[in-house]
Length: 350
Image 1 (cartoon, rainbow, N blue to C red):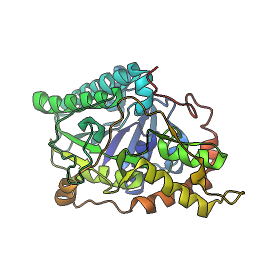
Image 2: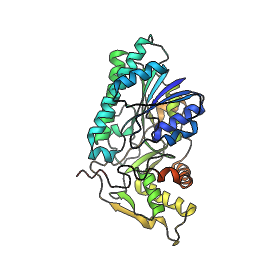
Image 3: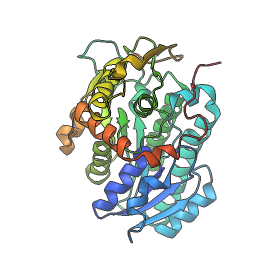
Image 4: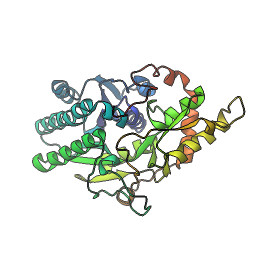
């Protein structure tokens, strides 16, 4: 299968690219190389004869038309997006332009290509989204997000992703475009850009800095190892039922405080502080961000029962792998620390 992967130099996109190449697929990686993208993320597959890189912005419709015509993909895996909630609070415009207008351009370019190619039966437009479109859950562990949960986005980021989800479904209903949608829980793992919670905690701990936790740390997330997510996405694009939405979760709910304490315990073992104290002593509670959802948790029954997919690691196993990766790849994260916004408190709403 020839896959056109948008955002393939980003965190989740690069995991998809690496896994797809390993599985024998051809991949066209379309990425604008904005601040959070890094071609080092796909360096291990860059020399593969099955890999091609196209630097382009999904807001640039002529470029998209050229890429579709030149490469004739069998399927699109659309991951390109602005994704950091805090940045969306400070500057929502980029999220509207990329996540909504950019997705519209992708849909129209795909539709044009699909029609001109004679509407091939095997073509798929797989839109990758987030569980944040569903809003916030109560503390009740029996209440989970399902594919039929009503949308209730609370941040500019989640609102822009909800809008793009609606566009994808509208293009399927109105134009017959063969689509698939997935909504995932919080990802973590190797190559995670150092502005999100887990890499921030790891790198701040190593630097002897405070480990910031929003509010009282009680916000709960379902944590999904990024390589498991890549496996799930490739399963969906190959086996998913057209028009179907699949929620992808890690089946690993943890509060932010529990997560950070687990990271500290792992670091205490793998890279002990020179003073003999625990990294937990660096935990600092900071002012919560505006509109911070209390809990996300996914019911993964559909993807498990229909496609036979389940995550392969617990969050503790995945965090240990992640910490070790950051310890082993200092040159990768050092090179990113001077990029715009890294190491700064964003999303205060000021």
